[in-house]
Image 1 (cartoon, each protein chain N blue to C red):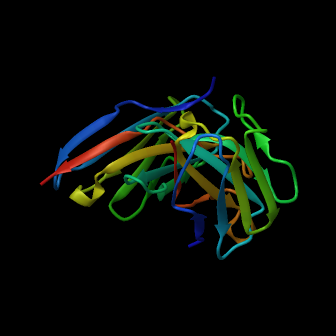
Image 2: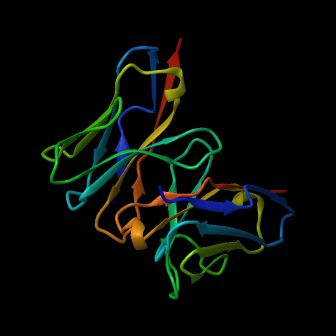
Length: 112
Length: 117
């Protein structure tokens, strides 16, 4: 079936490093993608989104890159901080009104 | 931003009992609400999509008679886990979209931890 998945289940970085979390999606019809952060025992927290007509979008300390040719999505976190430690999920949506489908998640651990 | 709440935040019940979880959109009218389930160290799995005033659409493998969803108003959806068993223990998360929040964005609730003894 079609799914959104992440390449690595865990990523460990030092405080201050830049982090890159990757995601591969399989449905070329998806037109909206979101990165979420989830801390233990909490609901997903929106980080940044991107539509299929864009290939890059920047937020505060975060950048999302979309490569539709290879169906690849990445989240870059600049100057990673201990507070960034969490599980990160990418999610895709095929069209407005339908549900977001989540990938497997990457656990980011930031050490001081 | 749009706020979604869930109640209760956690619940412990005995096997065989039913549990109701509420999901509310606090500052927008949610024409569509979604229910997800998340087992430990796993991703969010979509259970059902619920449009206000209509029957919910369940994902393959989700028993509609066991997980009763009601979306009677634009600000409230409920999920009732009937005859709960230990394997139903999970983190249940709702999300909502629609109205001024738009149909593309989904706003997530904080989740409800269900433990069935």
